View 1 (cartoon, rainbow, N blue to C red):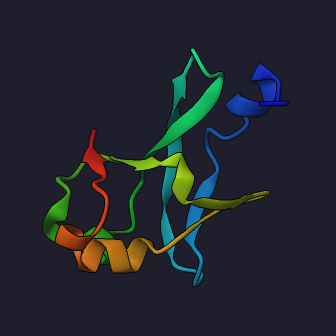
View 2 (view 1 turned 60 degrees about the vertical axis):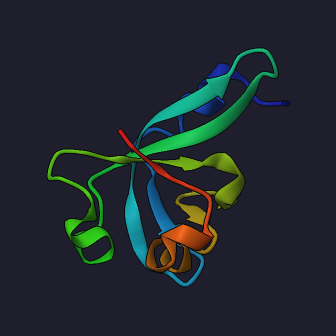
View 3 (view 1 turned 180 degrees about the vertical axis):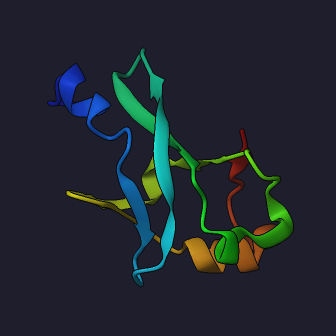
Length: 97
């Protein structure tokens, strides 16, 4: 990873959108693998209630794998979140945090 710690902390507070433009949530924290010096997940809060509905209790968040991230800029774009939520038995798990 070529980034500096300052770059990692800039992820916090960014809005996350699916690749089709749907708001997913806001980054509250990052999960790191210190041995590999890599970000492995994003903890999201302020979730889109239409997207998560009754799946997530109010005040809770989700942890998404960083490999879902397509692009990081002013916002963060992720892959397939809608399809993964509609077919959770066919997708990799996201965790409630």
